[in-house]
Amino acid sequence: MRTTTPNSPHIRGRWRQLGSAAAATAALLAAGFGTAAHASAATAAPTATHKVSAKAIAAQVAKAHVRYEKAGCGATPKKGYAACDALRVTGGTTAFMERQAALKGVTPKTVKPNAASASPTGYGPSDIQSAYGLTDAAAANGSGETVAIVDAYDDPNAEADLATYRSYYGLPDCTTDNGCFKKVSQTGSTTSLPSADSGWAGEESLDLDMVSATCPNCNILLVEAKSASDANLGTAVNEAVKLGAKFVSNSYGGSESSSDTSYDTSYYKHAGVAITASAGDEAYGAEYPAASRYVTAVGGTALKTSSNSRGWTETVWKTSSTEGTGSGCSAYDAKPSWQTDASCSKRMIADVSAVADPATGVSVYDSYGSDGTGWNTYGGTSASSPIIASVYALAGTPGSSDYPAEYPYAAAGTSALNDVTSGNNGSCSVSYYCTAKSGYDGPTGWGTPEGTGAFTG
Image (cartoon, rainbow, N blue to C red; front, top):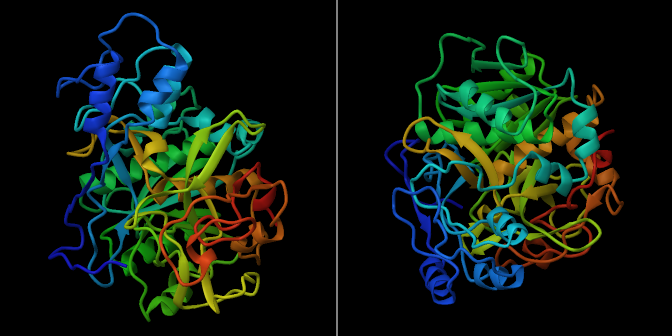
């Protein structure tokens, strides 16, 4: 999937999805619904003081598109290294902001590039729990369970930023002092940590906040690899399991290689542990470790509120032919016995999915380095992987000999999963590899959680 090779495995290569925000701004101005914001402002203040109808707001906001960039850890990696799958919104109007404006009957605000927001501009815990039928489980379950986050490099502000996020949303404290939070290196050290990196710090904040949002009673273990090499990240996975985590999220990936099957047995084959991995953000195509037969490969959706009985609707996340959730038939990994789709003779990606579209992104608090501007909205399958790992945690400890990636397959076609049936992430030779349909498809797997029933043995 990735074809260029940077000089360093963690070069902060960036790109931006421009969309049509300029046209949207003009439309808002013409309609009298808004004004261009000053560069230093967190959001654009409306010039009009009168209230406007939700229908009028929706008509104007529908023309807007968010702008976003890869997190600094998302540069194309060289062989043997991984990139994070995080995308940070830098402009435009998110689905959360659109909804807030419609509820208040006011002009929608906009995210401004590289400016801290005074308050969240993306979905928060109540939204995620509502969308995935987890409100009751999040309140009652998770105590004593540990969700591990594996990332590269150090985020010096991880614990402080986590505290800010949880305080804002009224979640229980999760600190080193109360035993809820722990940060270690890939060797398990709490004092000898990797060098700090602003891009990976944003990724770590995203991951920690998604665990908090989905399973607020869970303990959180952050394991920081000393680099983004496959070997170091894999070693960090092993350390997470060694330290007792039964749920491990990996929000990173790279191109497949013939080494993947050896990585499987060295790093990702842990019976009794639910390991999740992001499917990728570069649209149709497979990446590793999502292709591992021992992990739950997590695809991405666009999540919006709806008047239907669920209150939400989802489609495959795709922004362009090179931007969207990953999926595909692995070139190397063997097909697990529980995966029975007809056309792919090897491992098929994905298994399940959750929100990943930056336009319908999630709220994150990050204060470290150039990416650390306070409240941000993030997307990418880096959001969906820790959400699904946390749903597994809400469902309870896996069976000691199980590989929990198979659990959703036992619940296939039931009300325990929201079947995503529209959208695609590109062009492919076999339709379901890249196009949503009723039942199993590559971009969204068997669908998104509706409670915890599909994530227990």
